[in-house]
Image (cartoon, rainbow, N blue to C red):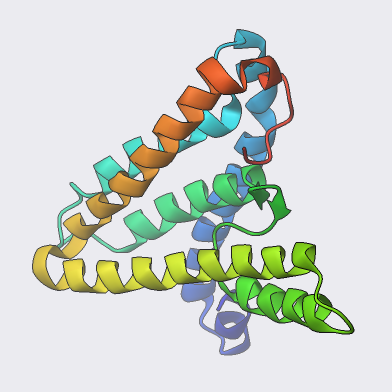
Length: 190
């Protein structure tokens, strides 16, 4: 969109796109800078703290009035999505992008092909299923969001607090109990 605005000579629109792009860049920087000092606390991991920060931002975004410019939410979401994408690099031991769905469609095809060619390979089929589950989660999230937006508009973002709360609880439990000995590990998803 930035490049298209430049190509069309819409300079102010192009300049605006530097703001959400800058938020995304800042999110990547923050997610690289904070894990080391958080690790030194020896209490919780960066990825656990990140979910808590996301919950705070989501909660605050729900209070933004409908009359406010949508760019407020866009910039905040770009910031936290960048941190999440840079921090959560796998799910259940399977490398994957956790913030967008298009890669899951590709990965399902790749792993199904690898799993079914010749003789079925359970490892490849498992990877395809993990990506399918993530894709289904995206679709269900989109459906629920669309339905909630019709009823409660911008406050629909608060529905994201439910899965985030579940994830936070699981990560806290892991940090404080089951994976306490891994607290110094570089975060890439539990």
